[in-house]
Image (cartoon, rainbow, N blue to C red):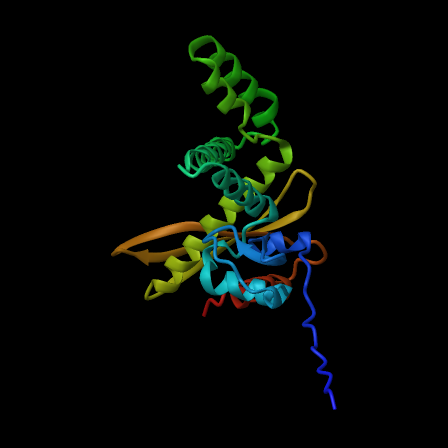
Length: 239
């Protein structure tokens, strides 16, 4: 009597564009879609293609990038794809330098409190014209590849802001003690903003840094202020 064996097929998961939010792109391995980290290039199994698992992997391996936005990971994916085209890695290095240059430009724009829209409307045209006059075509092409759009500018400034706050919070946590100062100020839309500064000890020196700015949209009682600060402390695990 012949025995028929039934082989159960494991359900194969498919890649979703939202997985960019967790730092993963998709590659084909043995005809199957598998997630690949755009930061460390690690390839996971197909059954790991679940939002909570990818997010957990990002938290465990690259906690410093947890606050990064989707455009940041998409830029890393483009660098990865360019690197695959060239075994020498020259494309990868070039793309990385272009991304770094974009961040450097938006850092100066944000530091001088200029509207980030000038990156695309003023800074890039000036750079292109000067490069065309002074340098050769390849250099001009690199300038043309700079991503200085309005949306990119906002994303990069948000990334740098989140990274700066993370550094300040880590220094506060390592300080033996710290204190906060609170101010209230109306913005241009007449919305009351609560501004918090922190004073702490870092390398035997007292530092004072901006910590938080959040609107008080309804009432502005002491309880509202206390709740807002308490929620922030809880979210950032500050004691």
